[in-house]
Length: 290
Image (cartoon, rainbow, N blue to C red; front, side, top):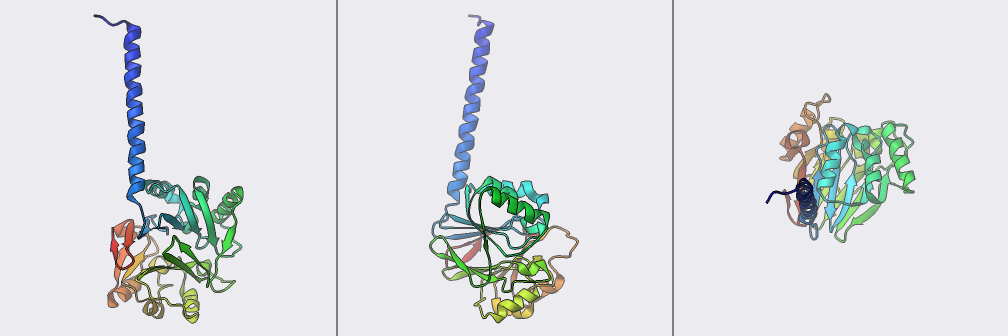
């Protein structure tokens, strides 16, 4: 039997409709599987996200989230795609370590796109475009900045303690030294995340007599020679160091002196320029790379 043209069109549209429905269902199912695969009950995941010459760290524990910095605007698409791939819909805590663009270049977009909880940043008057955009985005959501300083702390879920160790002063000549330095402790494991803190801030941290010992150290200022003094490194005594830096960057990060210092102390170095995004998982006793 020969089908009429109208009948043929109806069948074609019906087939297309079924295909669209199938694709949508597959997409939703796939995304829900991604979200379920990152269930973080009973563990801590720390993502050192490859954002080129910049910094961004995502922590997930007890199905709660903490984002530290967002990398530079030049990596906006890659960064936002990575966040999306985790299935995250809410950022319970955000820390903007300091106003430099390579750390908060995408912060305004994160604030706009995500449900956000408490927002931490150092008290500072800055005229960087990224900082101003961040403040405007926060104002639009009626969110206030919780001023960060040494001695503060909060819990990420029930078992992860986040201690702010810096800044310890109200004024610095160098913006890097305003960096929020965070120690994250999960049972018997710990991470020290230092933003761009340089020698001045490191010396202040040492003088405060904080317990600095940590299994993992995120090197200050991308592994620059301005940071990670021998005294500071000795106090932290990490097994693993992370350098967040871009491929063939013009700054020479991480610095050869720092690499040699790590080698002399038998500290394993991961670099985002060579290793790309680095995900470390802790069960409270052992830290391993995923």
